[in-house]
Image 1 (cartoon, chains in turn orange, cyan):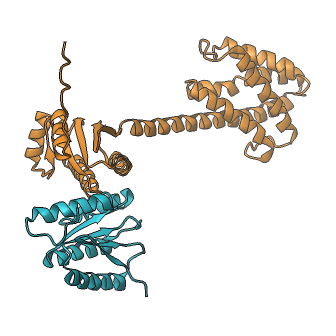
Image 2 (cartoon, chains in turn green, cyan):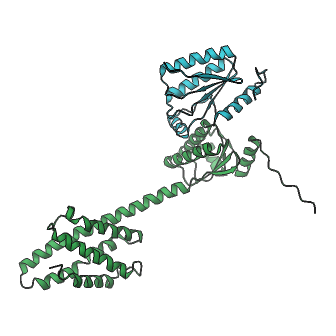
Image 3 (cartoon, rainbow over the protein chains, first blue to last red):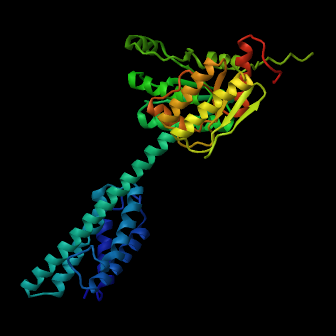
Length: 278
Length: 129
């Protein structure tokens, strides 16, 4: 029956979606919506034929599930809310019920049963969509967090044998681990002898952060590289003393001072080029 | 039984640890090394651990012991070639090998050891530099 009226159902469904504004002001194109709806209906009908009407986890529904997963993932990327995504499925109810009413006129019992089956089925599909949507959102957030982590721990080769490690943001255990790995790998790669750890961008230094710094410094020392800590702001200097922390590292107020010391330690000199004769 | 070779390079002894250490081997190494130090009157010990991808508290303590023994026999100890992962593990274990000098590779280790020996300001045995 559904197969017979597939195209009619599709038209009214798409129309309803358009009318209810699920296009979200042009975020998704009408063609795309149409295509999604058409594909979904096709798979929906095919799966219905497989006979399972109450269990969408079965193998008969896997094409529908795949399609829905794809649709909700793409919508999650486009910034749709979960309810907007789920509405894609729920809005099918209206046209479907109208169709059922028209087809099963006069037999209230059968009509009621059919509508109940359809409701249950569509609800399940809708919930599934919302779930996948949520999951893809979570994936996006996790990936962004990872990228942020990598972005915020650059190791810069300042000069021959001198590395700089500008730290920005709070230092927690996980970040320390990344920073440490990054730094040590760079030490091996560049054969650096001195690493300048700049903490200008670290908002607060408490005992935990200090401990993490010390860990990083010790690890670098084990690799045969010396560390200099720079960029200590006045408030942070006070905090360090008030907390009674022992950093046990050479520290300098500014990156420039640290760099000068590093040059001296590695026996390098930077000279101003002599002015050219006129 | 496997044995860890000890080579004389200039004023130092070069020990390259290529296999996993265990108690017996560590004891044998300490024996051999002290013996060699006395025999050759070397002024430095260079321990290369670049082949080790696992250094636990046991090896950490062994390294400290060797350094202390060498110190008694008037020789400097430098550990070279530690891998990044090993360094991280050691730090996480709280072993920072205090009292041991470290260098990135054998080349720099040799340079460092020569500097240390020269800094002691005594008459070096040979002209290795």
